[in-house]
Every structure is written in structure tokens, then in C-alpha cells.
Length: 393
Image: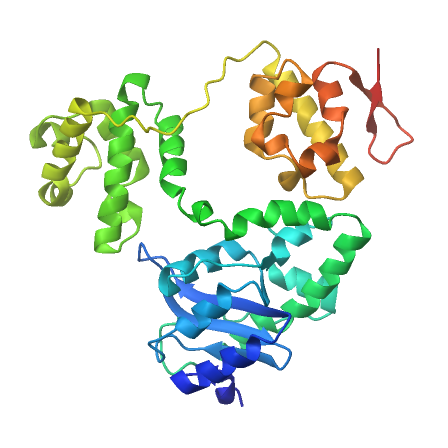
């Protein structure tokens, strides 16, 4: 029944992409395995236009450049749910930079849903359909694919265009389309997908409590692991786990013997990577990289815990008022930053990157007033929330 919905020849792919160029919007999804590779293996690309969904088999079609040209064009709009993972995979396999992406998960967060709302929940809410979830853990590398596998994969794009049209209308009606478009700009920015090393460095630096005089070594080790993982096409933790990078940094070994004293370091690791590790450390000591990612330095003022609690309550209240996901409105990192080192004035507050644009418009002056002590919490037993903020002089 579903065999005809699988595109497996070069000629059929060209016919498909030629037709899809005339669409205003198309739905896109992928099936890939990323558990055992640095670069996830791509096994299926699902696409839906006005004629319904089809699946492109990248194991059968060697030249996917027609799809690349489609994805990098301004039209049609590419509708994707939770777009970053799919874009990241397709950017690598197709060597393409995306244009005109609409993320239904991000849009849902502006319409009162959670920040990580699953597609099946949106299908229920917007289409009144209860999709099947039977092939969540399918092995997509096996061929031939079963008909019910293909049906399951096509369901991931079958309803996306209907959801897209509904979300566009709702965003316009609520005056949120501009907010969404501003937030969605990063989806087509290639730098969005190239910051994993910086993020991991900051995470390991924080959890391992690496001293300031050792951060250049940690940065060198994190970059080395990234290159090693790419070369062998294995997950980062296959080369060495995060906590061991922190431990190696703290120890700063100068010999394999010293490296072997670390708990969790295997003899096989030392045999394979030991010489490289020692060279990376020696080079970092002799020629430290000047481009180490910045790490925020917080000089906590008194009252951090109280400010944290107040900010969380404020965020919850504002989220309910605006009907926007609280995680989208303010990240946990920003709440921590504001609690530990509150800005001294409005100009300083809104110079923070995360508090510009639509968030500044959404929160207005209330966040400034809160941090200046001009808003107070009042217990209101008649209110559903039980608490609300009042302005004080």
C-alpha cells in the first residue's frame, strides 16, 4: 500500500523536487540514528506537499542535491517540528544551509504549549487525530522497510502543514507572529549548529570546578576530543567522558604513568590516545589559546535565594498572563544570572542579549520594577493563583 510513497530513484527525486518548488510550504522530517556515531546516520527523509506525504530513501539515492537546492531556497517554507536536530543532520549530509524554516514546536511555545511539546500532542490539539506511536524505536537502517514503518514515518509530516496554517493564524490573531519570527532567526543561522564545543567547555568547566589557571588546558582537551570524535565518527563519550576531561585537566599529567593513576582511565585509552593527550597538554601549557570562550563570573550579592524564588514566581505569573511557555520567556540560566548579579538599572538589564527584542516588549517595565523592589507579592485567597504582584513606592 505504501511502497509508492517511497522515492528511491534519481528520476523520481527530480520530479518530486520540481513539483515541490511551486508549493508555498512543505513539511520535512527525518529518521536517523545518532547513538553510535559522531555524525548521525541518515536513513529516511519525509516530505509532504499539497499532494500528501512521501519518503525519500537516501540509502538508494546517491545524489541528494535536488533536495539541497530545495531546502536552501527562500520558497517554499520548510515546516519542521523541533527543527534543530533535523536541520543539523541534513546540513551535514546535504552540505546545505537552510532558508525559510517554520518550527511548529517553537510556535507552539508562543501559543501556550510547553517548550518541548511533542508532535503527537499538537496533532491531537490542532487536528483532533490520535497518531500511532508504535515505531518510536524502529531500526531505520534495515531494508526493506515494513509498510507500517513507512506509514509511521509519513505521519510525522502528514499533519504538519495543517498545524502550520493554524499556528500562523493564531500567532497573527495574538500579535505574536513578529515575536516568533524574531526568535526563529537562529534556526537558519549556521553558527547555531557550531557551538557545541563552547557549550560543552562551559558545562565541564562548571561541573568539574576547573581552576582559572587550568581553563586553557581544558579548552585544548575539549577541542582535541571534538576532532578525535569526528575522525573516528564516534560519540564524544566514546573517546573520553566529560568528567574524565575535567579530571585530566586537574591532574595535568606529564607522563602516561601519571595519566594511568586516574580512576576510570583504561589501559586501552592510554595506549590509543595517551601520547596525543600529553602533547595537547604540553602545547596548551606552552602556547595557551587566547580564544577561550568567556565564562560568566558571578559575584553574588546577598539575597540570591530570595531573588531566585521571587523571579520564578514572577516568571510563572507572566507566563500565565501571556500564555507563553515559561522556558521560552526566560531561560534558567538567565534567571540564575539575574538572581546572582541583578543589573543596577534598566539600561544594564536590557543590554543583556536574552532580554532584547520581543522579550523586552513582552515583559515591559515589570521586570525592571521587580528587580528595583517596586513590585511586591500579595496573598490573595480569592484569586486562582493565590498570589499576585502589586506595585509599591
